[in-house]
Image 1 (cartoon, helix red, strand yellow):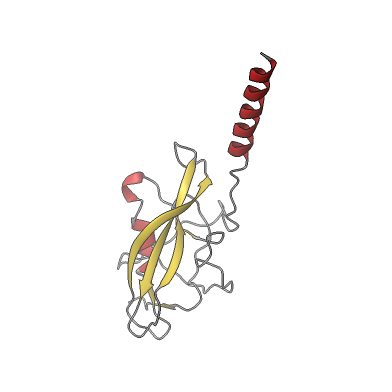
Image 2: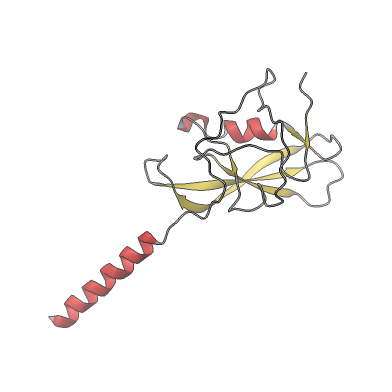
Length: 153
C-alpha cells in the first residue's frame, strides 16, 4: 500500500512540475503596443527598422502581430510580410512552412499558442530566410534586419 501511494505521489509531482515549467520564453510581448495601421493597399504601415538582429529571426523574439478572431489568424502575418521588400527593394515571396514552439497564452481557449514560421525568398537570395510570427500576442512592429520597406503610394 505504501509503495502504491509513493508512486502516486511521485507521478502527481512529476505531472505538476511538467505543467508548471511551460513558461513563455518570448521576450518582446507588449500589451501596450498600438494597433497597427492598415494602408489602402492592405498591408501594415511599418515606419521603424529593428535594431535587434534577433527580431523575427529567433523564436524568443517573434513578430507579434496579434489577431482578433480565429477566422483571421493568417491575415496579420500576410499584412506584415506584404509591407516588406528585399534589402534593395526586391519583391519578396513567402509561405508558411510550419507551426512550432508552444507557449502559454491567455488569448486562446486552450491556454497555449504556437508560433508560425514563414519562409521568405527574393531573386538573388542564396538561402531562404525564416521568420517567426506570434499571432496571439501584441508587440511593437518593426522591419526586421536585412529587409526593406515598400513605399506607400
